[in-house]
Amino acid sequence: MYCALGVVEQRVLTAKGAKGVRLYRLLCYNREIEFHTNVESIPVMQLIPTDNPSISQLVHGGPPITVIGNAAIRETFDEKTLQQAVNSRSAAGVTDVFINPDAHVGFGAPIGCVMVSPSHVYPGPVGVDIKCSMSLLQFDLPAEEIKEKTVRRSLIDALCTRTPTGAGRGQRNVKKGRQVSKEVSRQAVIRGATEQVCEAFGIPFDWTKRCEDAVHFGHDRSYRSLEVRLNKIVKEKYMCNFVEKMMQFGSYGGGNHFGECEIVSIGKDEHAQQVAEVFGLKEGHVAFLSHCGSRGFGNILATQQFKILQQKFRDARRPFPGNDKELVYAEIGSHEANDYLDDLALGANFATVNHLLINALILEAFQEVFPGVQANFVYYISHNIVRRETLTTRSADGVQTTQSVLVHRKGATRAFPAGHHALTGTPFESTGHPILLPGNPRDGSCVMVGLPGAELTAYSINHGAGRVMGRRNAIRTLNQNAVDREMLDEDILTNCRRYPLDEAPAAYKNFDEVLKSVKEAGLAAEVARLRATFVIKDGDQADD
Image (cartoon, rainbow, N blue to C red; front, side, top):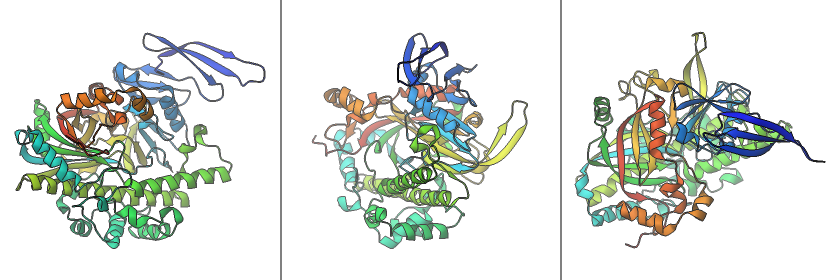
């Protein structure tokens, strides 16, 4: 693991005809490690502790990078994750980078990081699943009502006939899905969750008041630019299956996306109790947590943008930042930046309507099993997005500067506290908005709220637990029977015949240590824990 406090030895090794190689021996929290690297490729990197045990500074020869994570979490940061952060901080127009405790290797920039730039937009710190997000639906259903496995299995069946899972699957793959016309789908990606779009999809429009962003506009803050852009890209070969992708509204997809039935446990302290009341959480009641994004439509848009910008760099013979082709960028105001921001908005509008429709279908499924049950929409929040925000920074001598910037959150979640100017007029003006953090089915998930200390990290925190094992490594090393037994022992049902090994709890970081780091750093406070009772994921139908 690359988690050094300091360099204790450095020397250059050479061989005839070979490039210079630098050997670093690093003091790594009570142990030494060695690694070799090309001299030209990497500056000396050090994690320097601060007075707060969950805040450190990554020093690399340029401006330092703030890192959130206690000693246990710092052990999980590998060399490539830190190098991606350094590459990102050194890239054109970037004024700040922050590493969250869930950080691991991503596209150009780490997953679990925040990048700030007033002048450049970067697709890497968004990734290929535009506006991947979380949402939470709170039912007025006491936990004891779903204690029996037969009841939970009925709910799973009702959900799986409405909300498909798996790559490429959409509403045509389920019996009780909600299909809409091509024109309504077009309006959804152009205009987002407007009242007309919500009515057409059967989504309660008042839910949009509890969205981080219910609609996204084009680069010029208009719908027109999105309409023009969509008309152009649907004629391109790479978007020849536009109608098919629009059939994926109301679906989870594969990978780490899921729907999870939860039991809510609100914190006992006065702050948690007051905030939970504003959020609409109910102690000891059923809630449903969803994780998904912009599906195939967003993936195509993002992938094509990577190709376009990478080719532009090659044509201009411009070096990739950090020699990483995934860290391409476009200057704000350029044709390329306008196209990317328009594609981002189209994908984000899809993701928003997709989440809201999923929640409408979840409510419908629960009402099939429990006629008359009601639910309130708690919140919808993204963690793969670029947002223009106004940030205030303070220099070492106390001078304040306010600036409009692009905040890239890749596997990172917005954390606006009570009184933040952007929450004026929202239901969360006096508390801060809900932050929805998935952990894993065994260890649960969490609802948090931002604190004023989140200013340190551009009002951002982690988006979940973060991977500690790569997918291939998890599949290769974890025991399928042990994983399935663990789910059974925890009384967690699933729609999967065998729970995906690459999504097993052991593939993720220690969630308690992640949360402890965030709280100790003063970024956010815990409001409630969510305990899983069943999970909907990409997998074969369960046979129990």
